[in-house]
Length: 523
Image (cartoon, rainbow, N blue to C red):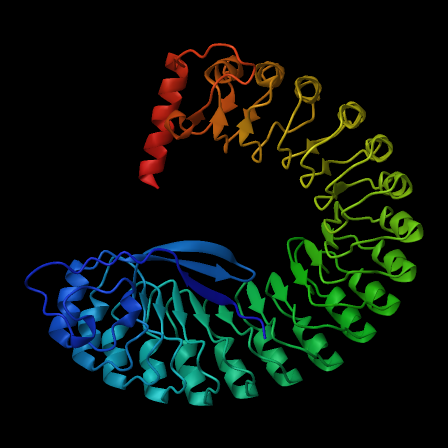
């Protein structure tokens, strides 16, 4: 089962100082390094804790919705129970999220107190929830109410939670859902996360399809009947996630591929390990935004031919590790705007020649090496070309890629020679981003910097860490350059052995760095 939300403690700096705070016995005389070791709290202790606690950072990873770091979280996952008065004290913590994943039960009275908290509220330890408590928790207004520990949900409790007034409602522990509960939850005004469901009836699928949310998140489904697929095909959600399916029938694929939706609708089938020609033909009818099939490690020539008829914006096949020449020629005929083959780690001249015929954007970010012959072949491609997995290139390969007429992305480069830097800078359609270039310390470092500085257009080295004063001086001859804050750089001796000089920050750079510092402070 795929888990949507994963919480990890990044910082456990707990400050519980102050003579007015009477610590629980679990805390002894000194505060623990991890607040999750606190096993009990009185209302008075909870009030003191909330007043003095400075919070920890928690990484929230949302499959399908990205990730973010939550600041100043109150994490008390060691608490086994909480009464109404203690819950009321904890709910007054208004600077960040609250995690109480150790609670296995929650009284209605405690629920009434906790919903006053308007941030993220995580109660993943609850394995039961009364109908009344569910109705109370629906009053929560924060970004997320997480109840991933619930394995069953009554129809009445579902109706109660459907009125949730906050953002996301996560119910990843549910493995089954009644038709009535599905009908109720479809009324939720925002996102309901149901990645734990392993089966779904056609009636439940029809109910969920009526949801107004732009995300229908069902990555736990391991099988999908043709009837349920036809029901889901009516969804108004722009993003349909079915990454738990390992196989898909031709009829189900046909139904889902023909769903009527805007050009921005996305279909995710990243769990599929096999794809029949019939299923490929069905999915190829998708006319929306993204068709993601990243779980496929191989594709037959027949399936590749069928997928080439896809007219949606992007076809993503990042799991493919190899392609036959025939499959490459077929996929090159892909009618959509963008083709992503980020799983290929090597590219033969023949495959490069075939893929170069693709008329849209081509992503080959999995390539770790590129021969000169393959570089010359792929350079004939007329759409934008992404090669962000390459860490280095030969001078001949750079010269070959210079013939590419559309946007070129080489964001994985970690080393450059002086000649390569100058040739790269001369490529009009190179995007100028070098986020992996963290050090310039080769003997020709100053010449590398001088070569990069000849670029017409912005140059970005946001993660530069080590550089010599003379090399940096040469680099900032180019003023439309993005650099990290100077104080974060490690200045090294001149790589060519010449004498080092102090680096003098010009006025224009100092002013720009002041703006960077101010922006950091605002964040």
